[in-house]
Length: 301
Image (tube, rainbow, N blue to C red; front, side):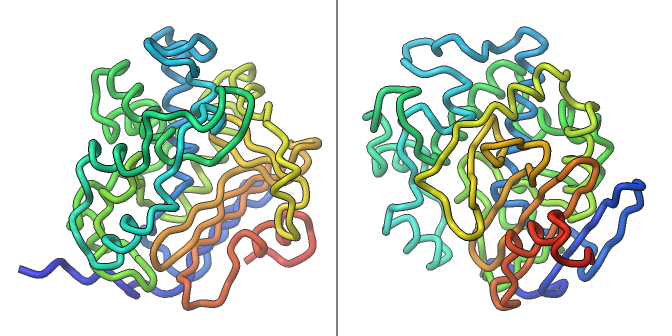
Protein backbone atom coordinates (compact mmCIF):
# COMPACT_ATOMS: atom_id res chain seq x y z
CA UNK A 1 0.00 0.00 0.00
CA UNK A 2 1.40 3.40 -0.88
CA UNK A 3 1.97 6.06 1.76
CA UNK A 4 -0.69 8.78 2.07
CA UNK A 5 -0.22 12.00 0.15
CA UNK A 6 0.09 14.90 2.58
CA UNK A 7 1.27 17.52 0.11
CA UNK A 8 -0.44 20.79 -0.53
CA UNK A 9 -3.54 20.25 1.59
CA UNK A 10 -4.76 23.02 3.84
CA UNK A 11 -3.41 26.05 1.97
CA UNK A 12 0.02 27.58 1.46
CA UNK A 13 0.26 29.82 4.53
CA UNK A 14 -0.67 29.80 8.20
CA UNK A 15 -0.21 32.86 10.37
CA UNK A 16 -0.81 33.78 14.00
CA UNK A 17 -0.20 37.15 15.61
CA UNK A 18 -0.61 37.64 19.36
CA UNK A 19 -0.62 41.39 19.81
CA UNK A 20 0.37 43.43 22.85
CA UNK A 21 -3.21 43.44 24.13
CA UNK A 22 -3.32 39.63 24.16
CA UNK A 23 -5.61 39.40 21.15
CA UNK A 24 -4.86 36.53 18.77
CA UNK A 25 -5.22 37.19 15.04
CA UNK A 26 -5.16 34.28 12.57
CA UNK A 27 -4.63 34.22 8.82
CA UNK A 28 -4.68 31.47 6.22
CA UNK A 29 -4.75 27.81 7.19
CA UNK A 30 -5.85 27.27 10.79
CA UNK A 31 -5.16 23.53 11.05
CA UNK A 32 -1.92 21.83 12.12
CA UNK A 33 1.40 22.34 10.34
CA UNK A 34 4.86 20.88 10.97
CA UNK A 35 6.79 22.92 13.51
CA UNK A 36 10.11 21.59 12.18
CA UNK A 37 12.94 22.95 14.35
CA UNK A 38 10.65 24.98 16.61
CA UNK A 39 10.41 21.48 18.10
CA UNK A 40 13.91 22.17 19.50
CA UNK A 41 12.50 24.97 21.64
CA UNK A 42 9.86 22.62 23.04
CA UNK A 43 12.49 19.93 23.74
CA UNK A 44 14.74 22.50 25.44
CA UNK A 45 11.89 23.65 27.68
CA UNK A 46 11.16 20.02 28.58
CA UNK A 47 14.81 19.34 29.45
CA UNK A 48 15.07 22.52 31.51
CA UNK A 49 11.95 21.68 33.49
CA UNK A 50 13.63 18.37 34.34
CA UNK A 51 16.70 20.36 35.40
CA UNK A 52 14.49 22.45 37.68
CA UNK A 53 13.06 19.22 39.14
CA UNK A 54 16.57 17.87 39.78
CA UNK A 55 16.27 15.01 37.29
CA UNK A 56 18.94 16.45 34.95
CA UNK A 57 22.06 18.57 35.43
CA UNK A 58 22.65 21.48 33.10
CA UNK A 59 26.35 22.19 33.56
CA UNK A 60 27.90 18.86 34.56
CA UNK A 61 29.52 16.64 31.92
CA UNK A 62 27.27 13.77 30.92
CA UNK A 63 28.38 10.30 31.92
CA UNK A 64 31.23 9.20 29.68
CA UNK A 65 31.13 12.48 27.70
CA UNK A 66 33.07 15.72 27.64
CA UNK A 67 30.02 17.86 26.98
CA UNK A 68 27.12 19.03 29.13
CA UNK A 69 23.39 19.37 28.55
CA UNK A 70 23.94 23.13 28.16
CA UNK A 71 26.48 22.44 25.40
CA UNK A 72 23.94 20.24 23.60
CA UNK A 73 21.13 22.77 23.91
CA UNK A 74 23.39 25.57 22.59
CA UNK A 75 24.96 23.48 19.78
CA UNK A 76 28.38 23.71 21.41
CA UNK A 77 29.00 20.00 22.09
CA UNK A 78 31.12 19.38 18.99
CA UNK A 79 28.71 16.82 17.56
CA UNK A 80 28.17 16.70 13.78
CA UNK A 81 24.91 17.14 11.92
CA UNK A 82 23.26 14.84 9.41
CA UNK A 83 22.00 17.71 7.29
CA UNK A 84 25.04 17.53 5.06
CA UNK A 85 24.71 13.82 4.22
CA UNK A 86 23.80 13.40 0.56
CA UNK A 87 22.53 9.85 1.16
CA UNK A 88 20.18 11.15 3.85
CA UNK A 89 18.60 13.71 1.53
CA UNK A 90 18.39 11.20 -1.31
CA UNK A 91 16.46 8.71 0.80
CA UNK A 92 14.16 11.41 2.20
CA UNK A 93 13.38 12.60 -1.34
CA UNK A 94 12.73 9.01 -2.45
CA UNK A 95 10.16 8.51 0.33
CA UNK A 96 12.16 5.71 1.97
CA UNK A 97 11.83 4.52 5.55
CA UNK A 98 14.11 6.36 8.01
CA UNK A 99 17.42 4.72 8.83
CA UNK A 100 17.96 3.05 12.18
CA UNK A 101 19.62 5.47 14.59
CA UNK A 102 22.78 3.36 14.60
CA UNK A 103 23.18 3.83 10.84
CA UNK A 104 22.54 7.55 11.10
CA UNK A 105 25.23 7.97 13.76
CA UNK A 106 27.67 5.84 11.79
CA UNK A 107 27.05 7.74 8.53
CA UNK A 108 27.65 11.03 10.36
CA UNK A 109 30.71 9.73 12.28
CA UNK A 110 28.98 10.93 15.42
CA UNK A 111 31.53 9.25 17.69
CA UNK A 112 34.12 11.86 16.68
CA UNK A 113 33.73 15.36 18.12
CA UNK A 114 34.47 18.17 15.67
CA UNK A 115 35.89 20.44 18.38
CA UNK A 116 36.33 20.50 22.14
CA UNK A 117 32.93 21.16 23.76
CA UNK A 118 32.35 24.81 24.47
CA UNK A 119 35.08 26.06 22.16
CA UNK A 120 33.10 26.16 18.93
CA UNK A 121 29.59 26.23 17.50
CA UNK A 122 27.91 24.08 14.86
CA UNK A 123 24.18 23.46 14.48
CA UNK A 124 23.54 19.79 15.24
CA UNK A 125 20.31 17.85 14.97
CA UNK A 126 22.28 14.91 16.39
CA UNK A 127 22.90 17.01 19.50
CA UNK A 128 19.15 17.37 19.98
CA UNK A 129 18.70 13.63 19.41
CA UNK A 130 20.99 13.26 22.44
CA UNK A 131 18.78 15.70 24.37
CA UNK A 132 15.74 13.63 23.42
CA UNK A 133 17.40 10.52 24.83
CA UNK A 134 18.31 12.36 28.04
CA UNK A 135 14.72 13.58 28.47
CA UNK A 136 13.32 10.10 27.95
CA UNK A 137 15.74 8.48 30.40
CA UNK A 138 15.33 11.13 33.08
CA UNK A 139 11.52 11.26 32.86
CA UNK A 140 10.86 7.57 32.22
CA UNK A 141 8.52 8.70 29.43
CA UNK A 142 8.67 8.65 25.66
CA UNK A 143 9.30 12.09 24.20
CA UNK A 144 5.70 12.66 23.12
CA UNK A 145 4.36 12.08 26.63
CA UNK A 146 7.17 14.08 28.23
CA UNK A 147 6.42 17.05 25.98
CA UNK A 148 2.71 16.77 26.72
CA UNK A 149 3.24 16.63 30.48
CA UNK A 150 6.00 19.19 30.92
CA UNK A 151 5.39 21.61 28.06
CA UNK A 152 2.14 21.40 26.12
CA UNK A 153 -0.32 20.92 28.99
CA UNK A 154 1.19 23.69 31.16
CA UNK A 155 1.23 26.00 28.12
CA UNK A 156 -2.42 25.23 27.37
CA UNK A 157 -1.83 24.06 23.81
CA UNK A 158 -4.19 21.33 22.65
CA UNK A 159 -3.10 20.62 19.06
CA UNK A 160 0.63 20.02 19.58
CA UNK A 161 1.74 16.40 19.31
CA UNK A 162 4.76 14.38 18.30
CA UNK A 163 4.46 12.78 14.85
CA UNK A 164 6.06 9.33 14.70
CA UNK A 165 4.69 7.65 11.57
CA UNK A 166 3.33 8.92 8.23
CA UNK A 167 -0.25 8.46 9.45
CA UNK A 168 0.40 11.04 12.17
CA UNK A 169 0.65 13.62 9.38
CA UNK A 170 -2.88 12.99 8.13
CA UNK A 171 -4.62 16.36 8.23
CA UNK A 172 -1.32 18.23 8.64
CA UNK A 173 -0.53 20.78 5.94
CA UNK A 174 2.82 19.70 4.48
CA UNK A 175 3.15 22.22 1.69
CA UNK A 176 4.94 20.72 -1.29
CA UNK A 177 6.13 17.57 0.50
CA UNK A 178 4.83 14.19 -0.55
CA UNK A 179 4.95 10.92 1.37
CA UNK A 180 7.14 12.32 4.12
CA UNK A 181 8.05 10.15 7.11
CA UNK A 182 8.44 12.21 10.32
CA UNK A 183 11.00 9.72 11.61
CA UNK A 184 13.58 11.46 9.42
CA UNK A 185 13.60 14.20 12.09
CA UNK A 186 15.56 12.20 14.64
CA UNK A 187 15.07 14.52 17.59
CA UNK A 188 11.32 14.47 16.91
CA UNK A 189 8.85 16.43 14.81
CA UNK A 190 6.02 18.24 16.56
CA UNK A 191 2.96 19.31 14.61
CA UNK A 192 0.35 21.81 15.74
CA UNK A 193 -1.44 24.96 14.70
CA UNK A 194 0.30 28.29 14.21
CA UNK A 195 -1.93 29.60 17.00
CA UNK A 196 -0.62 26.99 19.42
CA UNK A 197 2.98 27.72 18.43
CA UNK A 198 2.28 31.34 19.39
CA UNK A 199 0.65 30.26 22.66
CA UNK A 200 3.63 28.07 23.54
CA UNK A 201 6.18 30.83 22.98
CA UNK A 202 3.95 33.26 24.88
CA UNK A 203 3.79 30.84 27.83
CA UNK A 204 7.59 30.66 27.85
CA UNK A 205 8.25 34.39 27.58
CA UNK A 206 5.53 35.25 30.12
CA UNK A 207 6.92 32.99 32.84
CA UNK A 208 4.43 30.13 32.80
CA UNK A 209 6.81 27.31 31.87
CA UNK A 210 10.19 27.88 33.53
CA UNK A 211 11.51 30.09 36.32
CA UNK A 212 12.85 33.57 35.55
CA UNK A 213 16.35 32.28 36.29
CA UNK A 214 15.97 29.44 33.79
CA UNK A 215 14.57 31.77 31.14
CA UNK A 216 17.55 34.06 31.67
CA UNK A 217 19.86 31.08 31.05
CA UNK A 218 17.95 30.32 27.86
CA UNK A 219 18.63 33.88 26.66
CA UNK A 220 22.35 33.73 27.48
CA UNK A 221 23.33 33.11 23.89
CA UNK A 222 26.56 32.48 22.07
CA UNK A 223 27.14 35.34 19.64
CA UNK A 224 27.59 34.11 16.07
CA UNK A 225 29.05 37.01 14.07
CA UNK A 226 30.32 34.55 11.47
CA UNK A 227 26.67 33.82 10.57
CA UNK A 228 25.57 37.43 10.07
CA UNK A 229 23.35 38.04 7.08
CA UNK A 230 20.74 40.51 5.93
CA UNK A 231 18.08 38.40 7.64
CA UNK A 232 20.15 37.70 10.77
CA UNK A 233 22.21 40.87 11.34
CA UNK A 234 23.21 40.07 14.94
CA UNK A 235 22.67 36.33 15.49
CA UNK A 236 23.18 34.33 18.64
CA UNK A 237 21.98 30.95 19.90
CA UNK A 238 20.85 30.29 23.46
CA UNK A 239 19.39 27.19 25.08
CA UNK A 240 16.93 26.15 22.38
CA UNK A 241 16.38 29.72 21.23
CA UNK A 242 17.56 31.81 18.29
CA UNK A 243 18.35 35.31 19.54
CA UNK A 244 19.90 38.69 18.84
CA UNK A 245 23.32 38.85 20.47
CA UNK A 246 22.62 42.35 21.82
CA UNK A 247 19.53 43.05 23.92
CA UNK A 248 17.71 39.79 23.07
CA UNK A 249 14.50 40.89 24.80
CA UNK A 250 14.34 43.96 22.54
CA UNK A 251 14.65 41.89 19.36
CA UNK A 252 12.92 38.81 17.93
CA UNK A 253 13.48 35.71 20.06
CA UNK A 254 12.28 32.22 19.12
CA UNK A 255 13.15 29.67 16.47
CA UNK A 256 13.15 29.09 12.74
CA UNK A 257 12.33 25.71 11.21
CA UNK A 258 12.33 24.14 7.79
CA UNK A 259 11.97 20.82 6.06
CA UNK A 260 10.74 19.30 2.82
CA UNK A 261 8.02 21.51 1.38
CA UNK A 262 7.71 24.27 3.98
CA UNK A 263 9.28 26.61 6.53
CA UNK A 264 8.14 28.18 9.79
CA UNK A 265 9.21 31.11 11.95
CA UNK A 266 8.01 31.47 15.57
CA UNK A 267 9.26 34.62 17.31
CA UNK A 268 8.45 36.99 20.14
CA UNK A 269 9.43 40.56 20.81
CA UNK A 270 8.32 41.69 24.23
CA UNK A 271 4.69 40.66 24.66
CA UNK A 272 4.09 40.39 20.91
CA UNK A 273 4.29 36.99 19.20
CA UNK A 274 4.29 36.36 15.46
CA UNK A 275 4.20 32.97 13.70
CA UNK A 276 4.25 32.27 10.00
CA UNK A 277 4.32 28.87 8.28
CA UNK A 278 4.56 28.84 4.50
CA UNK A 279 4.78 26.22 1.79
CA UNK A 280 7.92 26.50 -0.31
CA UNK A 281 5.82 27.25 -3.40
CA UNK A 282 4.23 30.29 -1.70
CA UNK A 283 7.33 32.38 -2.35
CA UNK A 284 7.21 33.76 1.20
CA UNK A 285 10.25 34.00 3.49
CA UNK A 286 8.68 33.38 6.91
CA UNK A 287 11.67 34.61 8.92
CA UNK A 288 12.09 37.88 7.05
CA UNK A 289 8.31 38.48 7.12
CA UNK A 290 8.02 37.80 10.86
CA UNK A 291 11.06 39.93 11.72
CA UNK A 292 9.69 42.87 9.74
CA UNK A 293 6.35 42.63 11.51
CA UNK A 294 7.88 42.40 14.99
CA UNK A 295 10.28 45.30 14.32
CA UNK A 296 7.39 47.52 13.19
CA UNK A 297 8.42 47.56 9.53
CA UNK A 298 5.26 45.84 8.28
CA UNK A 299 1.67 45.41 9.35
CA UNK A 300 0.84 42.18 11.25
CA UNK A 301 -1.51 39.69 9.60
